[in-house]
Length: 549
Image 1 (tube, rainbow, N blue to C red):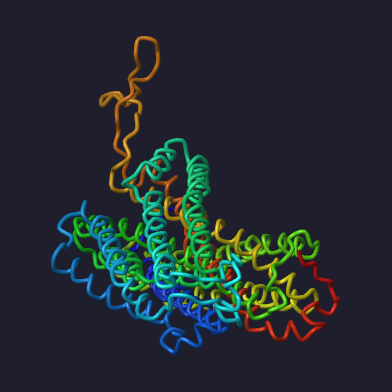
Image 2 (image 1 turned 30 degrees about the vertical axis):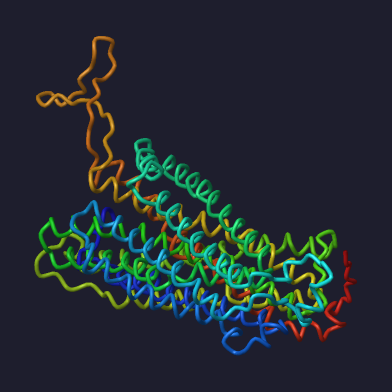
């Protein structure tokens, strides 16, 4: 089928497209962020429960992580009135600014509110372990588990996550919004075809990992230095403290996308579609910001859960020797798992897409007048396309899920707990960078297409004589070039559409799904920790010897 109408009601897959936006960017991302919140809270509670001092300080101190969540909900609710009543969107240029302002104000509000909460519930001195602070830390032993200035340290850990998340969000916006240079460079690369567009998009994605990964490394260093792994868990909760606002601006994207689809299906005036496209372009950026938060928080949550696993299996208390061949071997295997997992999810999208395209072609071929839009043609079978997508998603979900669930279990059963730590570390280090790259690459390609569609791309094209239709040339024979604004349907737009099509499974499937891989492997390891320890005291069925420092 050549050039089928996009979003027209006679296109069989148009309803499936709208449903997919809701399922992926609303239900999927919402459940991902909710899972991050729940798992970060669990990690913090598990680590706190191993501390004699925190347990002795009382119930309020033990459940302090829940207060971070509670304050976040109240602050986000209060700040929401800024966008609705005090600083609403007034024109196309102000859309992204208003949404960014909302996120920044929420972060500032959380920062102001958290110190009194920390001062109220966190003791001044405590030891993150079974001993008391007096017995473990009074002999001059320097350890991150010996926490002094507890309220200030907890506040700094939460703020590190809060502000680190905000910076990651803004960096993500820079690399995915067509208001800035990187996406415009990707759009300009369409001048020479789809291949250069793909090359530029991949390069953008790889480059976009530099600052977020550096920020995450800084958060881990600060939090661990102040409060050991409990601080890392608090930093993860801090990054998720603005979850309500972050999720709201994330969901904004698919709502605007669907509004544009409905406008075209209802054959509303072209001006309506132009407005929804402007909203959708901003929505793509905010969705990418949401994915940035999700990936960053997933990395911290995975590390915190790994710490909870290490705490639970007290045999690892003195650390894991990276020079242990089993640990290093599983570090490499863990680094490979995100690529295996991504290959499975990407191919699953391809399988479903092929089936969908064949069904759309069948309907265009068998229903007279459907492709041409002839009046009186029979309606398309939208339900069949929705069923193809739904069945494929459920069917193709099984192999990646089996991989993620069985990898840590088999590793712990046969090779022991140290091998599990290597597996988790490898999966985290590799997964977070692959996820950021995939998410930002897809978002950049999507907005590069939007930039071309709105007429933002101007390139020099040979001047055509209006009378003869031939190319006008200079005295030396070179063609006369004139600036030409590219529009929907042109060659540049076709190249941009190819990039967007490649980017959709990256930003909507493989990228966000890697969050699940990082977190689920860690939470399964934590759940099965006692079982692993029951097998040869944590050395696995192969009785792999441990090598302490």
